Length: 387
Ligand SMILES: Cc1cc2nc3c(=O)[nH]c(=O)nc-3n(C[C@H](O)[C@H](O)[C@H](O)COP(=O)(O)OP(=O)(O)OC[C@H]3O[C@@H](n4cnc5c(N)ncnc54)[C@H](O)[C@@H]3O)c2cc1C
Image 1: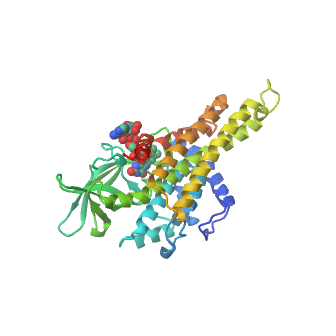
Image 2: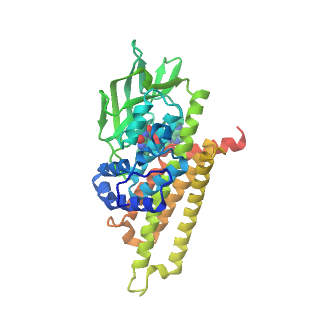
Image 3: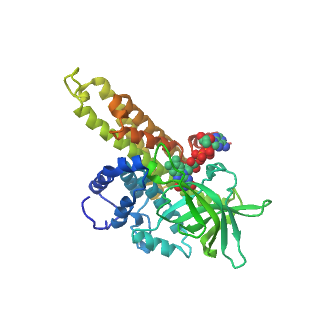
């Protein structure tokens, strides 16, 4: 990109996104190797006003929709995957919070516009696993006499833990006989919030997705975004937008990772000229066929993402289940694409000097994000059978 001017519009050019991808790719291997958080990438995104892409214009943001967010996440994630994941979550959380802006949102939006204060959710827990399968979170929110809330619990996979400004923490309240579930906004620097450096993973190594302990964290009354009985219509309605944006943005991230692998593969097939062949590998029909299979899977992914994002943005309506199916299909295709690339690159692909093995390790994480495929397919089957 080569300049530090903030981007004035949500419609960011393909050229500028390609520049940003190349810039982030330059340090991605180092962050993967050291499992170091990519602070500089977030400073850069802040300079370019891209942390505020989905902050409404009424709050000083760029007012971008899901299609804009998916394009940026795909490009950024293709450069450095952990940056893309946290950016995706930040976009999703701004979309969710700004739909019903509470008293705290003005400050949160302002932070994004100023290039700081990234948002993320703390849903999963070590005991519970994914919150999307049902079951009550073990994290407890207790109403204090003065109206404030106290939080105690243990959360897992806290992506972006070094820089997140506010966490949207899933917690339970009420009584054991009549439990309630809801979300509470917790500042990243709240007293009693402790990050435990547990993340040492095969993929997304730079994401700092550590565990977090909440020990007597006290927040203002307005930080609670509403508690409702599990399975209630209010919770389902609130989750619909989250599921749509989560499904499409997770898909966009892993599609971006697969495209980065495809690009490296093409360079390799053009430059590698084994002496037994006397020509570039790109001239071999068998390898051309594999490259074609990869292109076809990428076409499917692009079509699925673009169609879903357009329908979500233009008000045609997108069923949350549809977004889940897109997440399932695209993340599986991403793993398949990178597996195909590895299958025709021999030692070169698996060598840690190449980015392909890192893209593959990163892509494996796509299957783990909620909703996992067994849940998606069960939901799709029930809907199809009307049961
Ligand atoms: C890189 C990365 C970053 C993440 N960042 C965040 C984040 O910032 N915030 C956040 O809240 N979450 C985050 N997650 C969590 C993610 O979305 C999932 O919710 C979480 O990983 C699921 O928990 P688990 O992997 O411990 O699986 P578990 O729930 O322990 O499940 C383990 C296995 O058992 C299966 N399983 C579990 N329960 C059932 C069941 N009832 N029926 C059938 N099969 C079952 C699962 O399919 C899985 O294969 C992140 C995940 C990844 C990979």
